[in-house]
Length: 427
Image 1: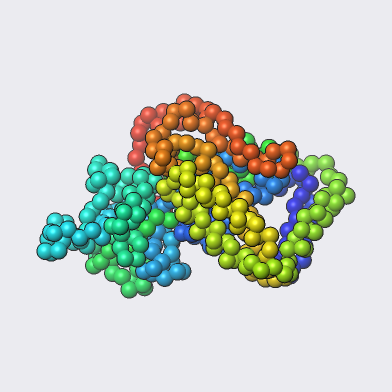
Image 2: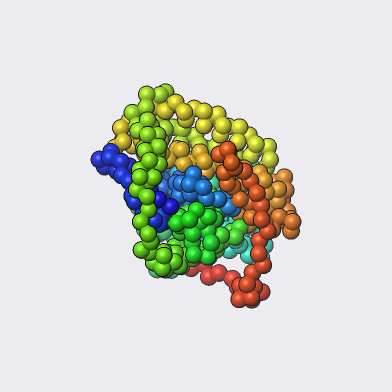
């Protein structure tokens, strides 16, 4: 590792960092989806894309966690679209209803005290766990209700906790209560509208036990890295990638520094290649707006690699992605302090990240964790493998797979204990 290059977006100046070690902590890739839970201008696969371009491998990119309850933009406004309605609402007794009106609903007798009308549909999907089942199961159930025409006019379902006392709601769910009150909804009197939203990418950069990639001196932590969550992250477990791996990587880096000085001439020669491309990107006089193409990319992934997937849809997504990539060669970009320049960079990262998601999802012909194939709905023991996405000798993406190792004894003991989550205050 020689260092890194970048652009100061305030001044437009290029910067070169002479460093023996580089740590990527640039977030994940759920911002590439049309509905996502946070950080519109982040999580656009910057970290995974930079690692891949440097020669590192990605893995598990097909595993994207969709949180079941995101706010519905058509009801609450675009600024709120996809933002989380905390899992604690369901943990404290919140119930999910579709918009299907039965004969009893029409007569005013829903059978549920305080119910908003409609069917409490989780009884059909998970009669034992109901709304407290795993995120992927609840998200798929909601998506299915909406796809089959039983959603609200705004494209969601109803999450209702009005059967609880007002004091209880205000005490246990203060942030949610205040947020919806500001939007004109009293949670103690009426349900809120929710729909699944892309929330977390389990995939990312392959790292070893110290957080180092297979590029010497290049590390990745946080949502940029992969390998911690398997096929489906537990709520709160992102701390393993941030706090735990942050400390592990920091200790490993401290042990190897100070290292012998690198070759500054080689660094600057290689930096010039990257800076030439960045210079050509700024003030480009094309016909395509980067922000508009980024929005199209988000729509593409939501439609073709969303909660419910199949081979035809993934193949169509890859074809559409290729056309989008061709259009991205003709961008209209402002100077290096402009938003269009930033959007153009994000678009480049996003195109690579989307390709990794689509190809990996098509490769895995089973359903496991957050990855659900309607044409392969069962888990296949033969697919207890990781899908790796890496560059071949001519720079094209290549997929390989490797078997997943058996859990350690302490982890297996925890799995055998069959613990359940306490949903209170989980995001």
